[in-house]
Image 1 (cartoon, one colour):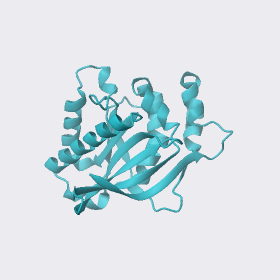
Image 2 (cartoon, rainbow, N blue to C red):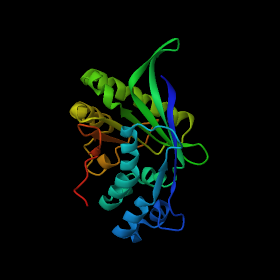
Image 3 (cartoon, rainbow, N blue to C red):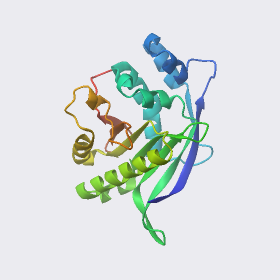
Image 4 (tube, rainbow, N blue to C red):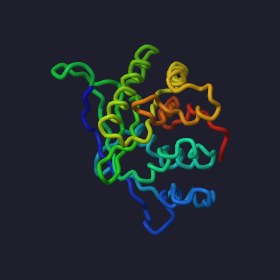
Length: 231
């Protein structure tokens, strides 16, 4: 599949001398809940005059302000260490429309890929986001089809660049059960510890975390791996 860029954005800190994500990953065991809260609040997401669709902004807010904190508070960062640490290295990113079909007869798919890169243009994290306006086009078959296509893309990107630390799939809650079942089949859930690593098989060999949007796409929840309650 090809892609066309919909928006670009940068990631920085509001106050460079204040506590930030890099401060947390440098010494995670000595960080207090208040320090963690301050670090996440210190993240600045700048859309650079581009229009960033709300559901994409929801994902970014979740990644930098909720997932980073949630992974630290529950200990997930120990199982997905490279992914968690790489969040602090994200410098910028872009949202790409996923195109299907042939080169001369392409069509816009009901989803986009959000790619997060470091300052050296190395892709660190990639997420597939379903468009709210076209979520109704997905059924069980097409949801799994798009999931498989995305994971193939992840493997190809990892083979060519080798810098990915993790990926996310974000589907509407209505498609939660079939997507969850397929991801569990792919990564395996028999190992009570290994399931939290949620690691894709080679050549990707990185975590895949599954998020489900709420009904109006104004929020997301981490579905897999399922974590203990936290605050």
